[in-house]
Image (tube, rainbow, N blue to C red; front, side, top):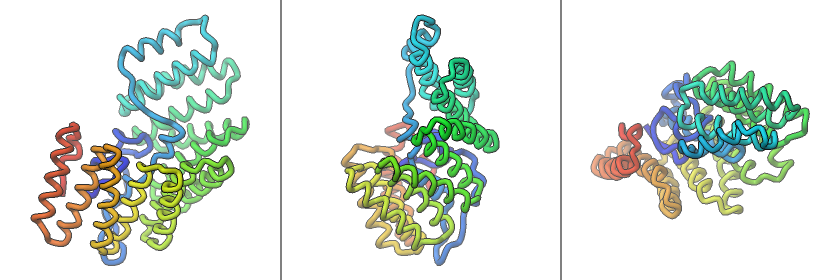
Length: 326
């Protein structure tokens, strides 16, 4: 299994980004051109627009207790209380307990209170959190329902960032369901809004997501076009993490086409940047990807070397789910 920078390990993927959904029904392999494409690798390229609009980091118990105290403090302003319960749902439970319904429960508290106060932006935020919760548990129908309800509210209040967020999330679900036409439609609508509000990082992410769908369809010319456009913007804004992602994804195109020399070149360039920014999970992923190429070439000595280096890092950072290599 090939690994990608954002996620850095093998499925389940919920550890790394909320909108990469576990237990995907996408076929494990597709035959594109001369080289079999590993769709699990494709899954891992769904990029982190959701981290831009929906940043996630888990909280410790002390922080949660503090937020819970704010939520229960009736002397606090409504918006302050809502921000606290939102963080409890999103940062407290969505990351740490993705398989449970705790995040949904606390987001419902947020939604109900926001609705009682007529605070539509917070209502939309709560619905998005619940949509993510359903996505992580594989309930795509309910996820789309909540994202769509959030989208409607964001459109009512003219919150373009919120609109883009919901559109992208719906697009991701369609991607995982294999409805590529709808996925591209929603990603393109997201891209249009990002361009309207001048969000270059969001533009780069949207371009990349569209490229992912084209690669899944074996439309390599379009995939490279979108990946390259994304890379250009990321270089303009100095987004090293994004640059590493784009380089990795372009490398995967060449791997799909059986051009191992170019694939190694792009994977190595991605690896270099990950080393510069200290992204150990990403380093492990790139080492694994390069090892896979050597394995495909029959160069088992180099393959074992790269796999071993990747494994060592995975063990150092506790990435047990990334230890099983091909």
